[in-house]
Length: 245
Image 1 (cartoon, rainbow, N blue to C red):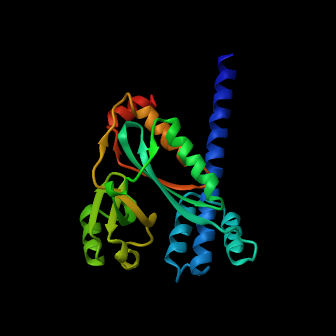
Image 2 (tube, rainbow, N blue to C red):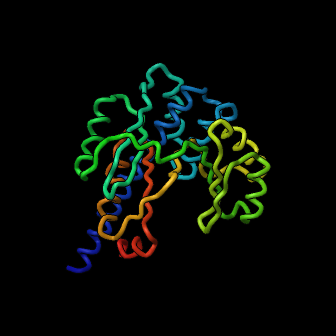
Image 3 (cartoon, rainbow, N blue to C red):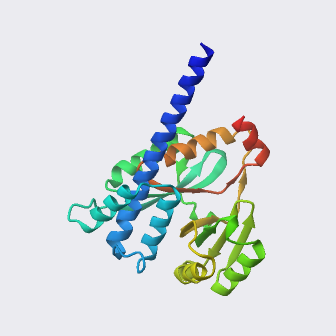
């Protein structure tokens, strides 16, 4: 019985992973389609599309899926998606920004509002807790902290944070495309490059509140319409480790 139970658990976990992967590919395809439709299907002249394709490759999205998304963008039957943003307070008084691409604003708004309400939160204006930035991420192998910092300064970046997981380069929104182009020449193609939200202050979330907050964010991200969730929380590494045990 123990072996059978373990096998079932493995199957369930694989099923959940497969479902999450499928959702991720759906979101990536939507971003590729919107990017190509807005700026053309040539990544060399469309920075947003180039970033979307890089993200797709990083997540091992099948080539056929990418090509279908590009074809839909240039075909006459492409779905019309609208970019929408929602803001609110989540569990633990954490400020949250939700960015979505949707073909039905009413449906998406109802889903997001329902998730906030379910976890005791509410939609409200919270963008003042964040700054709009260009965000470029390079893996640790791109170079040591000093080399990446030097390249970022020369490219015109405003800030760099380096750690074990790699290098995060931040730019002013208007400088984003130019900085990314300069960094691509010196460091190669980044893992991630996009306009993003950076928290101006963070809320420390303890072990009691962390499970609810993480479940809340997972549920938001589980929506097919939601592309990105940004929140200003900070959970200590030891708390995360205990939660994962």
